[in-house]
View 1: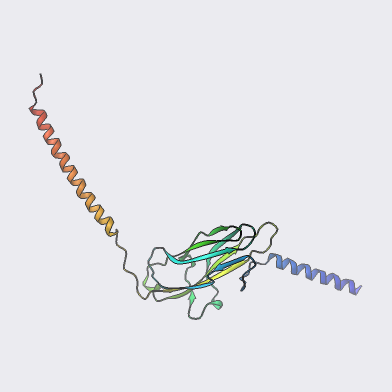
View 2: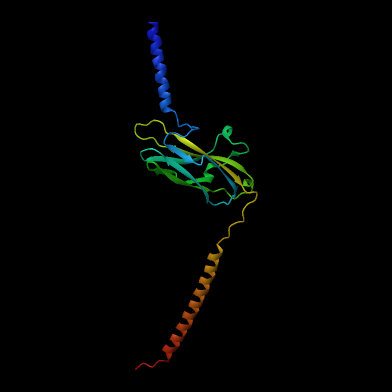
Length: 210
């Protein structure tokens, strides 16, 4: 009887363990899962200006799908846990300052896709000379019959400029020049039209009708 109870207890423990494994959230594995990779795994942006408007980085994030089927990936920016930060960096105050386009990408079999990375840091004096870290998460959605959704993390380190950039002009110089020229042309055209109307009235008054 004791052996049967031990066996039942062991089976229950195994069932519980399997249930935990099947419901566990995606883990940030140190090694790339089979058929899934990203590049780069880590990069640094130096002299990032707090411009107050978004601008695109030259750096791209490449998502590789080495599987034999098309895969869908979810891209998002996450604040990193404090205990996992690189030395000398703090967590980014707002992960929404990192804009990823697209946020959902489909990659064909044995192919790769590219994600554009934008920074949109507010134009504030207290955001100069900062060193932040933000995580870019790439999660592969599970297909029918799959349980786990593997996730890879790209570490992005951002170092802001020591000073704020010059404020942008209200209008770009070419736009200002075009506006001035347009106003001048409109004024000349209006003046010419007014003179023409005046002459036309004068001619009409001098006419003799039978």
